[in-house]
Length: 254
Image 1: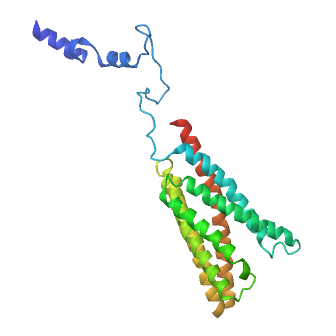
Image 2 (image 1 turned 90 degrees about the horizontal axis):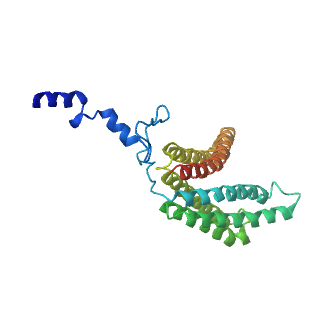
């Protein structure tokens, strides 16, 4: 008799004669549902066992908010930079002054936002410091900015370029870092964009030197790299918007 009982249990699949399918249906049946109730799940999905998406290592809500604001500050900064260019606004000198004021305020605001989110990546703090140094340098250089031959003006311009490149590196890498747990593909895009940005900058430098020896070739290299720099700046604006959107979307699904 014991052998027959054991055989029946084996045929049923579990001790006590309870089939695996029945056990699964008991686990999947909602609390309070009558016996025999059918539990349906969407095709190709598993029932929710309480395991949601992994919690990211960054504050998604904070980044979604401030990167969204950073996007608009970046647009204001780029527009004001065009207005601040004396060659563009020769016919309206007052517009150039207004552009310089707005651009300075936008750069300061940009640095403040980077400090706000530096808790999520230390690289943002480095980018913010470079932003503030650039603003301080531009204010200090105002008395000699009009004299292109002044050694102080040349030295100040070189320092501004260095601060801009170092700050750009920290910012791009910071964006890549915080996106690592949320959107790895977009995180890699930020790293690739930095390489394009650096290549365009070095190309302009090489073109400038080359123009001394072979003017036509140097000018062509500078033109191509300048276009590349413009494209990179546009992509940066797009990527900041997409990054903010990625954090907003992720925050709604976790």
